[in-house]
Amino acid sequence: MTEESQFILDETTESMEGAVKHLESEFQKIRAGKASPMMLQGVKVEYYGTLVPIEQTANIGTPDARQIIVMPFDKSSIGAIDKAIQAANLGFNPKNEGDFLRILVPPLTEERRKDLAKRAKTAAEEAKVGVRNIRRNSNDDAKKLEKEGVSEDEVKQLQDEIQKLTDKFVKKIDDLYELKQKDILTV
Image 1 (cartoon, rainbow, N blue to C red):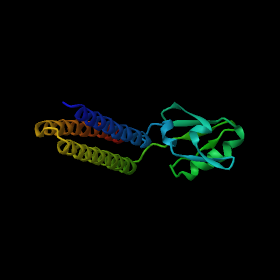
Image 2: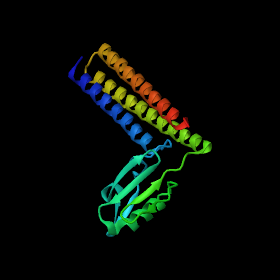
Image 3: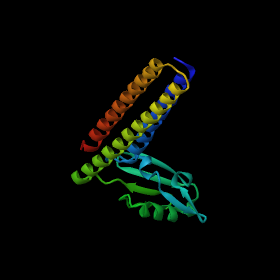
Image 4: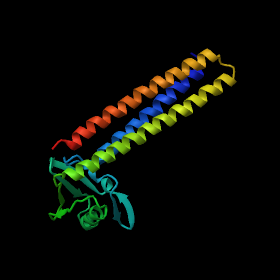
């Protein structure tokens, strides 16, 4: 296999791994009834006139499976953090305990579980589309090699390897989705 072919394979693998990592981070945002600091990811707090991620304004912890504790670095920002969590429309109602906020994570209803399972399926499908787009781009790169003088057999071998990678990563996405769906639907 030529250096160019190996480079294309390495780039393809790296890009597909990126798609799977992105899916994993999306899955962490979808709560499955257990409290997690990731549930607050994406919440922006107005802090001294600037919108900043909540992680930069407070420590976020989960003492148990049903609650999240948000401890602001600066006690005077507790009101802004409270407001930001409510504005994020996550279905949480933070309780101000003076030095920190306590968020009780309500148990999920059956309807909410089904809705979250649909969101997980959508995220998995988007990841698969991403992997297939990477495959298409890599195959285009392989065809360019043929025009540059690389043998037809080598290009065919490279395209077969790209397809094997695609199949491997699509299976990984399906496995991750099944685990997440089981996690969401288990009461």
